[in-house]
Amino acid sequence: MSAGSLLVVVWLLGHILLATAQTTNATCDVAHNWAFNSQKQSPCQVASSLLAVCTGSYEVFALPPNFHYEGPDMQDANPCQCNTVVYSLLAECALCQERTITMWSLWETNCASVSISSFPMPLPAGLHVPGWAYLDVETSDSFNETLAFADANITESTAIPQPTKTSSSKSVPTSSSTSSSAAAVQTTVASDTSVSPPVDQKRSNAIGGGIVGGFAALLLVFVLFFWIYRRRKTVKENGAILASPVMSEYRTDTLPSPPTMPVPSITVSSLNSQPPESIHSAV
Image (cartoon, rainbow, N blue to C red; front, side, top):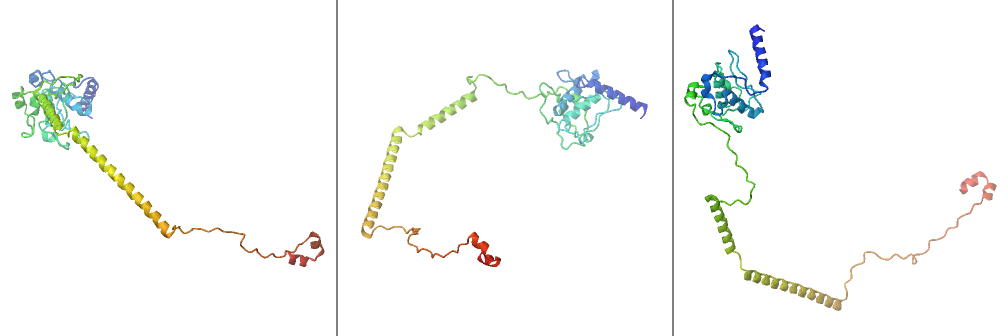
């Protein structure tokens, strides 16, 4: 490694250590004060704030001589880098340090998708992005500082203010749109009330339902009594119809006694008096 390269590495390492407490250590020449936003922030500071939206923090380091800001690597590319707004801000950040810039086509090489003349993420609260950062860079494939200087007074972009929540739940609406909504609700309620059935009609419907239910109950009782009457008449004329038995009683006293067979008795004395062959045959 040459002495010049070693000096550059040492210089960058030193600035990396210093940059941990700030968003950028790049200093713009006073001739580029036109590029600052209304809050007196340089394009380097604004670019750092936009890049931090995707990463949580981002340090824009000052460029040493003969260096320029390059586009994102393929593994690090994100929406905050892949847009013309950040490209234009970092291009002006390099120019205000009297350094060179890269072309837009080279900057977007590793981006899967790019945003033209817009920043794809929500702007940080309180940040003012200069209007010249949204100018076209595709036509010339580069940031045009002359056009940016001519449009230095373009309206800045800021975060969209969120509606404030009110704690009172009894606020009285005064806008015409709210009054119209209330009138519409009142009209709807009045319409629903006008078509609701009257009380007499509901009462007559209840009476009619009770009559129908009572008639059905009487009909069911009549059918039941008629069935009982027919069954009794059939039993009286033809006798009771009994179901077939599924089992019969088993009586042991009616069965003949099994024949008795005489069983020869063998005593111990007789076993001792007989020869072995007769004992074996007897057993």
